[in-house]
Image 1 (cartoon, rainbow, N blue to C red):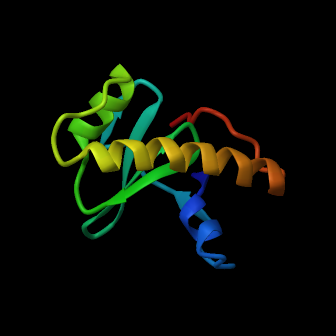
Image 2: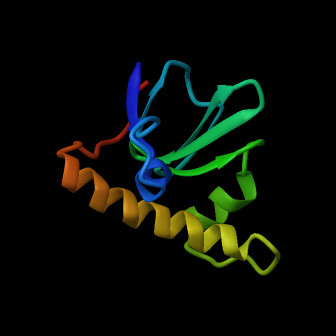
Length: 106
């Protein structure tokens, strides 16, 4: 089981759901990114142990763009920048609450 930080809960100032317990192996991995099925049709993508996206599918194209450091040309450009922002936000929240950022070992 791995504990991951959810920056979106911090941004929304929610006390619940700030941390998720990941109990499954990743369904997709590429570089520092791992995707976990979290519920019936819900996936979380983590960079290290920080959530950068919550989706209803596996965002392979987005992750490939993030790993390559290349902005997508299509509609997913917004998601690309939002994932980068989420990671930076998560680093700040992690520091503020004393959460250790590290690679996920499963």
